[in-house]
Length: 409
Image (cartoon, rainbow, N blue to C red; front, side, top):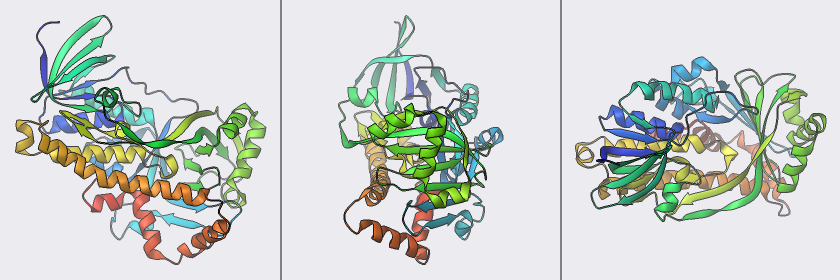
């Protein structure tokens, strides 16, 4: 295989989080390589594979000069969020204008973006950069030492040895690196599936996202660039199976019933639906975010419930905190030294715990069938409009401005 090529940092996984981290580290003058198992696809899918980005993530992408390329392809703007529980009283309304005292330029709380729309400008910039991209390629094995990581990369029949001072796992929920490093998980399977589809409605979305909390799980309507909604519907396995098997008319009837009268009054009758797909919902958080010469980012470190659309935003904050730890002179001498990795892990632990606690509490609160719980939820939703402090906390969480203020993003 010849002499090993050395990099300061090797990132395994070239999705949005891994590619963003690579560009950030190149900006800091590190020698960086990315190992990605497949060439990225920028094509739209049916149903669309979308992600929710908050205002804080937009600022991060703007600093890298990427947001303009994302926005030019079309994004769904979230200027308002309406939270309801079908069949119960009360609702919560969040509006981007409520956050302008802290961030005068904030016209949206967040954005709904197709994955390909985000990846395209990332890879255009990545291919113009000094980052070495091994793709399509796979990591066959690695071994860590006190001063380096030795990695075997395979591309087709070719094998190559490379070394790095630090290896970053950005290879997703079922991370190969995390498993090979012996890092365990805590969490659980929700015994729920997320059903995704895109729907058109009589009244369009008017830049508004709707979160409808139901006993079996939340149903979210997220505004797309073309006026339709992308839906994420948490359902039991039996429900998900039935919903997939329905014809379009039956599915639309079931969806309108699940959304509730107040949401349907806002969006109008559903007039069309795309193909449907499902994926299992789970909570998994790595028991440690680092090991010898290894750091975890994105879903390799944490996969959370989609109830608040925080997954990708959390991954971008992993990137921001890793960059903070790696921008100093000490890190440039050796980016994989223990003090750097411990600092990164400490920074991420509190933020991940806070977001996981928030999403879990929302899920459990609205899923509770304890006698009287529904009445109390309705009362809470009704009174929240008159509790600016609590509503402000929700707005800061939804937009990501709370994390910006803490210097996280």
